[in-house]
Image 1 (cartoon, rainbow, N blue to C red):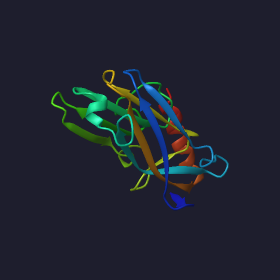
Image 2: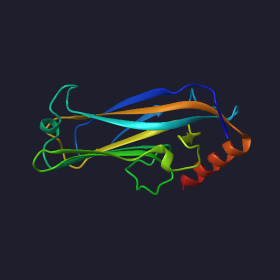
Image 3: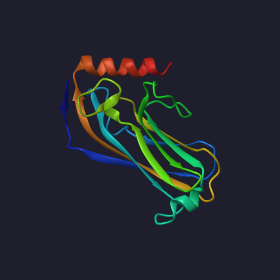
Length: 173
């Protein structure tokens, strides 16, 4: 189905969440995806790193007790957090701080669970990955979430590229 053109590499983007409003960011894939050459990005894994206001600050103290941080990566711009059955969803994570200040971190979806792809990833043929982050309530201080996407560039057969592009377009509706 796919021929690897590169070894695995990492794309990163950091988002600062300072209110209960959704925050958006993108990872530009224009240099990696090429329709003419049927070149796609194969996402192997997505990691979420939660930090407080500064790189070494107290996470619980910065966010506050009884709050939740949600973060999602999609290959279409939805403009909000989406349900798990959305075909555009690539990865999703959550950090919960209970009323007593205990942390619970989940990466509740990995790329190899959804979409057509090989055993170790998901193919993206769109020109960007879209990040959405949201806190359940305003934090004491800002929360930073770094998204690390481990990926490689692959060449797909014409049929496979077209099938993935059609699926992505259908998910846009």
